[in-house]
Amino acid sequence: MQTSVTKRGQTVIPAAIRKRYHIHEGDQIIWLDDGVTIRVVPTAADPIHALRGRGKGERLVERLLASRQADRDNER
Image (cartoon, rainbow, N blue to C red; front, side):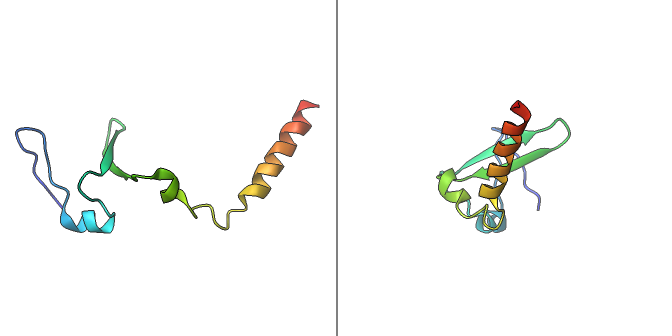
């Protein structure tokens, strides 16, 4: 998809992208510039709620406890 930039530096997010990523009026987006490419990333209004369930099946508690044990072992 391609859009144009106005004299004021504005552009339009195509409707298909807005629908796919649930971007609505008033939502915030982040512009990431790594010197080669530019990425536009929508941010959630409630980032904690948006992350809910993302770690499911990752065994995060076990990994945390193992990491803490490794830290304790290294201190000795």
